[in-house]
Length: 378
Image 1: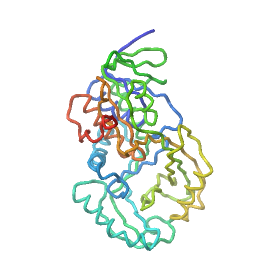
Image 2: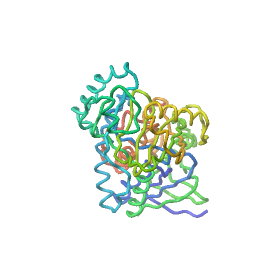
Image 3: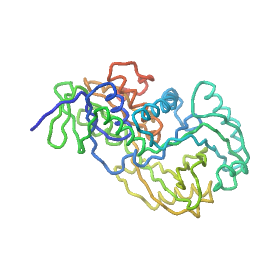
Image 4: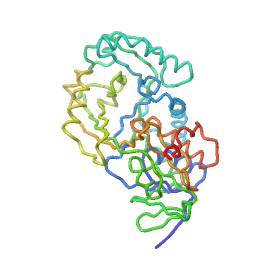
């Protein structure tokens, strides 16, 4: 069996894997990313809302990583641009936090105060936030249903997960990173991760990083390491509003878990289901389609005239305690992990990959990794 060597082997070619690879390759490390091209990877399906400060669903214990994420995005975009990569789909378009009923409208002032408190504490991507009437909201998002009120925030942004991953990959490869297609496994010697095998070849690696998304738990099982995560299926609808320029329409969120956002020129993305019992089954279901359409038309009835362009499905790596899994792997030397972001992968993926890369380089991580250690699972 042939063998070669690298400084770092990364198992997983999604947004997290390439984010870490970019940071490590820029620091001069010889990096190999191994991508199994599993069907249903979360990066390929995700919608890409970058606006944690306007959400009522984020885990407040994780507020620091969300703040770090929105702070890191502009820096990363500037670095990628310097490496000639500008096609990421990132744009600041603002958002509407909508009330679907009068009861929800009564809650908006309290939610507005939460957003303003977060902004005052330094969280980015909120901007100016203020109450608007249903009619004013419809002026901003013409397909909106007749709703009572909303909060308009100017700072939220969107990103195209596939384009961002591809930009990170291209930039990392410019700095020497390599890609191998195939299913990798970890090679060990006593309590040391010594490298990986892929396509019949053993690659000696000074460090190994697990970024396998929903498949990360299986990689941990090879080593007797329990990573308490599982695949959560998300089904997402893409609509083309033919003849309409939707590129500047704001993101739609609210007290419900579904969302709507837009991309140039006429693309509208509606999502998403959160299916905790799907297993590794990346198929579309009639029930999932019905849920997405029902939720979408309830808040944006004008989308009924749109053309169905695409259905996407992704298997999110969902940690049972709803916090990412980041840092070194307990009980093992030279082994690290970055996974478990659930529905927040496109928001947190770039900074998480960079934060774990900091640790691997011996630098101080750009945010505190301690709350996200895999050691919490015992």
